[in-house]
Length: 594
Image (cartoon, rainbow, N blue to C red; front, side):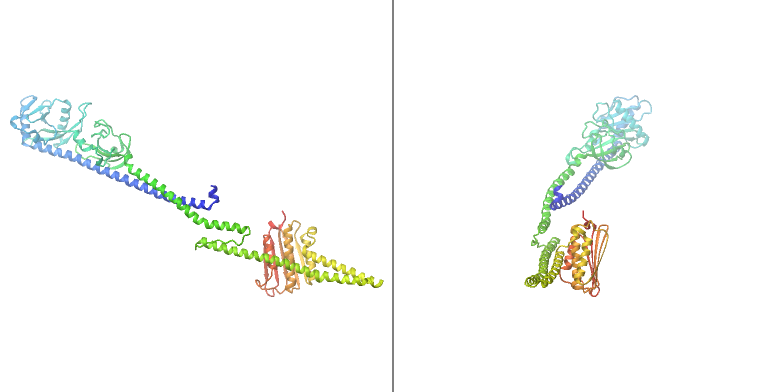
């Protein structure tokens, strides 16, 4: 933090780095979530394609079996075999086996290689019986579960007169190969229904369609497709749970939506409570109310997204390092000229006005460097002008004092010396007259010395304060300058600081001397006002005035500088034939002593 506060390089580096990283983060986050959305949508679309394909395959499988069963039920061989069985049954109670050797039935060619064929004859009286067809005989079925399922199927076929399907069932709790049946009516030559011909369907055939563990099928290592009945039990095996048909419960959102006649896809928890991408719909088969579902684990679907995320993070780190390096380079290229300007400014503050900053660029830094060099030249010129004005002023003051001493005091002292020497050889009466003259000469000399001393360091500041010193100045200059000077003061001046007192006195002295020498004024007004600690000095004459900006000399410049050094203002109002008015205002913070 200290580097950030003190160093412009640190500030620029931090700003450039943060801007770059922030922009990179926005782009990375947008790219990541856009890719994630696209991949998830692609995976869901792929699952939907698989689900549609599996649904079509299952529906085609059952449709083809129904069509084949219809063909079988209408074949002459089957009708002849059924006729033999019915004749035997009409003669008495059901028999265990009825030979069909004379009919020469080829079972494989008859059933097209499908599962077992059963026949449930009409039963005008007595209990229903079920027979299974082989190449050579009808065999009575004794398994009560199969008999019950086929009788139920027979009732449905007889009631509708159309082919029907029963759902899968388990013969016992240890059964691992559930079965279902297709039933089709068998008609006599007169068109009367003689019974129901049934075809057995093993779960193995359904699993061959639904259960595919190949990684190339679009379901990866965790994807699967399966069937679910209205009892929420599986109708095809799970990829993860062996022998799950009619044993594994699937109570998921996808299954519920499918049984609500909804078709779609979603991200849900599956029957294993594992997050998955799921596509679902119902199955369109007469007599079967099933749902078909295709799913893949969310974690596996996220593998490409995680790979993209890792790549983005790696790229972001590399680009961040590049941004930091570029930020460092740019920051130093920007800050170096500024640091040079800062160092040059420090040296100028120490008085090295000859310093210059080299810059060959045309941008703002180059313009600033040029302005700095011009400022340094102006400061050096101004300092030289001030020093010249100071030394010239001191020399002028020395010459003035020298002239006053030589022309005034010197001549008077020489005359007094001559007069004194001449008095020695004169008689007493003449000597006494010369001594009286010498006394007057000494008085004039004392006055002249006081005048010179007053010009150098005004008396009365310490004893009488600013107000009386100003009043005395105006009186003395009026007497010796031959011009009327009127002085007025308002306020209290006891707390005026020595510096303000001296500067205001010198400003007044300079202004009055200028007016006496150059204005041809008949009267000068001087007013000093104190209000709330603020001092206001005004000098006004009725002289000839002058055009502002054309007046040469150091007098006005010295007055302005003294006012500026006190933190005050200096205003000049003049014009040819309009007299001159000077106003100096010293603010409260500088006007009083602390």
